[in-house]
Image 1 (cartoon, rainbow over the protein chains, first blue to last red):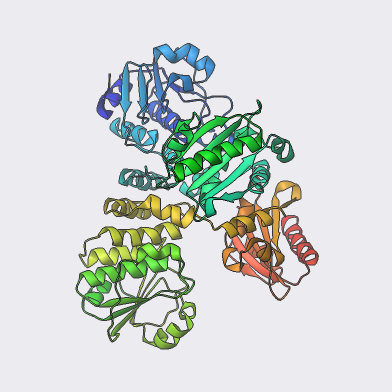
Image 2: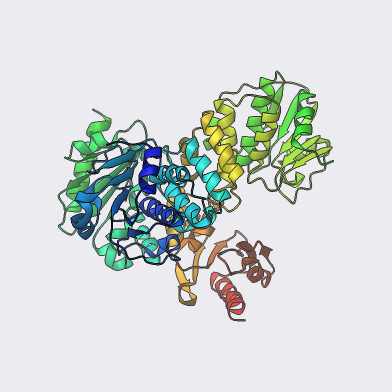
Length: 317
Length: 317
């Protein structure tokens, strides 16, 4: 049943011993939601706990490092920023997937089976929705709650860069910094800190840069040997795909990443009017208009040829 | 004479044929101020012109490409975001430095000799001040004015990342996007677009990465031959200095840039508690706590040794 912010606040006020679920591969939005909500519920005298995945990066410590653990028998289960129970950690999914009472989310594709769903798909971040819920419960925003909510907002807007950023986003950020959120610190941690191994990996990948179609298309690739050379691994490869599109004049950025089974994962990043999804669909993949992907058999030369001919076909059809 | 926003608006309302001066090496803040103000004044039926330096990058075209030129005899001269007349282009300085009627600025060091000065040094961007002046003149913010002001605000806050970003900054951004400012477009142009030659130059510089002091210090260098190899030149080197400090665990980032005379310009970027200015002062330079610089004789090996021993002395004194 779909509900609004007021009803959500009432439900939370009327329950106790609350378990909060965040998605695996946790990012700043799901964790920001989880810990902001936990802090608000505890301020209301309730027991609450976030089921935090073990692999959450150290950089998120400031969201929760002052919090003690509470033991209690779970009575109410809330998921935040979880679009699908498939995105929960395995053991969490097994235990809680069929007993979620309330889901708070901003993904239009949300398909969590739950008693109540608060879904606002115009919110840039799920933290924007949790912000409203906390305000509706009349909990004062303290510095820690403000840091948590700011973290989610800046994470999901790419530091206010993406087109999902709205006037509401900026107004919430204004209020959060007034309540003590340390935007400069959070943005440095989230956007301006790279591991040494990532820096080396990026350099190896950028060494493979080639331009096609008179400069419209920039292409890089990553081969498995680069992990060993750099000390990095696949968990650090996310930002590499968008590096190609940053080059002036490029409206098709292509990144080929070798997988353990010898196939290549292709990531396309485009600018208007090039539709990345249409190109990837030619090769059995898909995605969004500006970001899409597909999987192609190796070796590298053959994968490169296939994606280039798909782009050729699209551009000159 | 120092004045406030109300008095500034009155002065502008009471004058016509207005020349607006921006600083050389123009950035998004000075240009954003200039064109927002020009547009507001023209909306009030006045004649106004920005003296735009010839070398303004193409990426700023959207600020002014719809504007026609107006010919008139200058009666009133306003400088925006200009801290010192030394920062004006030579011919502009010669003609106008001693006849500036009104200076609008946010630099605490402002030393422009002028009849009236509107200085708000807590404003992250001069565009925040011009925003208030335009509102005070009761000019409606249209999309173009909003784009101009947003450009200055995002430029001088590093896309809302720097610690100068305040609640006022975010609130103004909220209002500007409501008036049509295209934040996603502007931020892509300002922060997410690199020339091909810059990408190659950055790769050459990052290839020189070396770590010192157990990972606390990252150092890179640029030698003159890299300009030829990359097709780049010194005008593109600004962002390179901060790349070193982005590495996790690094609190002293060092960038050595060879100059035509064989000396090296050293740029230090630090995190708390390391004081970059104190280190650079040991070598005859200076600057701010987190960003400072100095000039050292070459060759590279000797320059590198000198800066390393200055850092050693600072860290282990």
